[in-house]
Length: 446
Image 1 (cartoon, one colour):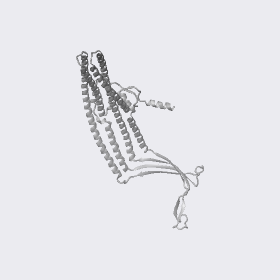
Image 2: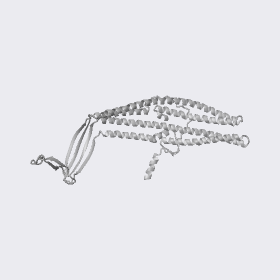
Image 3: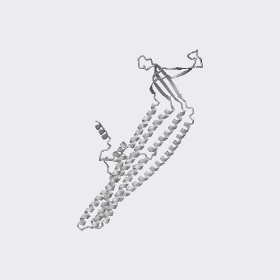
């Protein structure tokens, strides 16, 4: 049964099946579900909730049961002046007697209730604000995970596109090598031409081996960010080249930078610091509480408290306790001054964060505009390179162009296609940067 339940638990925790094809949206959803940083942020939220309930509990009635058993091996002696017990004795004498009995038992219940405490009221408000703070921290962590998953997803896609590019050129060169080898065997081509193609093939194969390693490394890092086991086999959805739409929608967003969670977190930090000042000030207020105590006492010269005929004496009291601070040596005054210094530091942090947010937004807008413009130029360049390669191949087959021109055209086409693929990813990355700079990174999957 233990093996069955453990096995079922592990199967339930499996985030993704081996070989599953993941879209960007699915990869991000897995990251939001399994990333350890998000789980830690959620635990902080949970802890803040329990902390608020703990503080709330201090304002509820406090009930304690207690019991005491005393066995005096020697009853404590007491000294009294002479003449107290015996009028005929000299008053200057000292009489030593033992008050009490050797054994006693006391058991009771004590109840206390806080009636007024300014510190308690401020603490409740601070606990609720702390909950909001950790909720914002979780949202900010989610933003970071979405951004990290997206960029690493694009990184893997980019490398895979480069591999596809090399593979396509490798296939072309392989066919060309077969043709030239056949021509060479029939004395229709030179051996040097065949060797040139073989050199290019070897170079391409080396680059493909290096890219294969890079794809594996980037996939493993993507799995780490997604929070899934690195030994899980995954495949990423292929890029749709038929989709010619550009991310112009991101450029038309409302640039309300106040929605950024890092700025909201600093606002909550300032609120918590202000509440800390109020909490220190509450030390100047009086504290009022009520209490009640009911107990039963028994006394004996020997341990016979369990006998049914033993007499128990009840005691009870109720009261009110008022604590009024008068002078603490200016401790609270200086604590308040320190807290206000922290508040000033947070204000500087807020100013720098706002300036940084504005700079990130302006830079990301510029980056996306330039990336779109470069993509359009690279697309035209790719079409031109494909046309040149096609025409050069036709001329070579007709014997009107040397092999070197064909190899140069192939190299130019490979570079143009590589630049085009790389620029596609640059556009997607710039789009992610713009969404993140406005605090709307979740729009990347819509």
